[in-house]
Image (cartoon, rainbow, N blue to C red):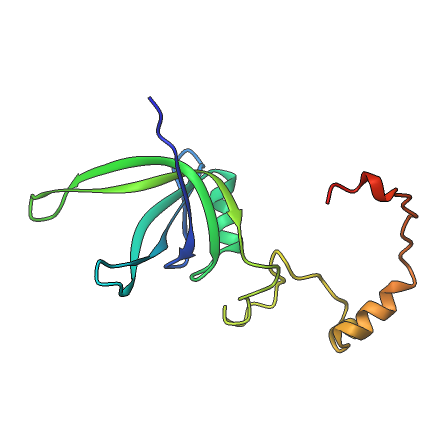
Length: 162
C-alpha cells in the first residue's frame, strides 16, 4: 500500500518540542493550506485546511530552531489516524501527518523580525561583527568584495539550453 502526503503552507502555531524518555525529539505544530476556486455562481472562494503535523528526530530539532508561526514550509510524510478517549469517556480521533522531509520556503532572513528579542541569527541571516552591524548592506558588500575572487567561466553560446 502507498501512503504519501505533500503539503505546502504556513505554520499556524509555533513548534512545540519535547523529548521522549528514549531521548528522541518530537515536535508538534500545524500547517494551513488553502485552495482558491470559483463557485457555481462564478464567485471567487477560498478553502482553508488546517492539518496537525509531527516531526521526529533531528528534523524535530531543526523545526523547533528555525520555524515559527507563519513560516512557509513544504512537508512530505504519511497520513496517520490518532485515536484517544477524552476526559468524558468519548472516543475521539483526528488525522495528522508524520513528516519525513521538510523544506523551508521562506526567503532567507524573511519574517524573523517579529519573533521577539532573540538576537541570535536565524538560518538565513549572516553573522556580523559589531562594526559590520552598523554598516549598510551596500557598505558590507563593498567591504567584503575585495576579498572574493571569482573564477573565469568559458561558456560557448551553443552550450546554453535556452
